[in-house]
Image (tube, rainbow, N blue to C red; front, side):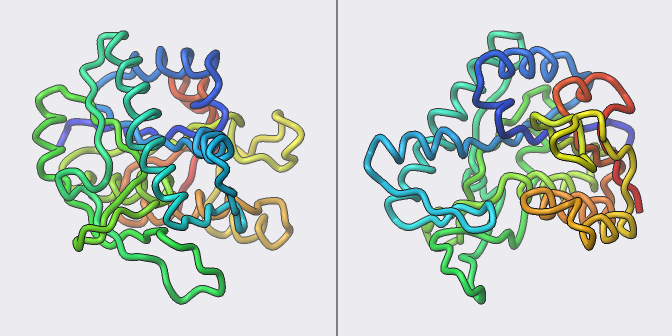
Length: 258
């Protein structure tokens, strides 16, 4: 196993502001070796829902997905955002193709239960199936994966893109030397969220727990890090949280370790 695969999850302002999106696409297209991109699109989904008169409900950064919101996120994630990203990569000479987790049975999930909040049609990952994607990647194609999954009984589920990226990284670790990069607008995990110079360059589980107990690491960064540490413990070689600059410059951002 000597072929490297870089899995990049992109979201936040990077994905949904035109200037940063162009820079990201240029940098992603320049990455060497095999690549796979997982994207979010929450801001676009919220904007479309508003135009359709559909209320957006969030609990601790997680989107409550009722039937109407599921229609919105399916349209936005699987259609608008996914195909715009594919077209942008094709324009840069990257032979990309767009899929959701439901396509080719890539990501199977179950509807989330057992929580105080009813999140609706939100899925928690059960299994990934990377056989077909592996064959396509080895032919030089680049998958662009939207954060939708299925339950095996015909139900589409809205699933966290960070979770999908980490689950795919674990699956591909059996076939590739796999690197996972979470790319967003901040330069890494920050001690002070208002100071981009306060990047924590390295985190292990002990440091993560300490910063979490102190309230330095909180909200959406917690599940992102939990996904990252889980991936590391299951065979992924490297996990980095960074911004666009860190995609192409080694050592930028926050590197996770055991």
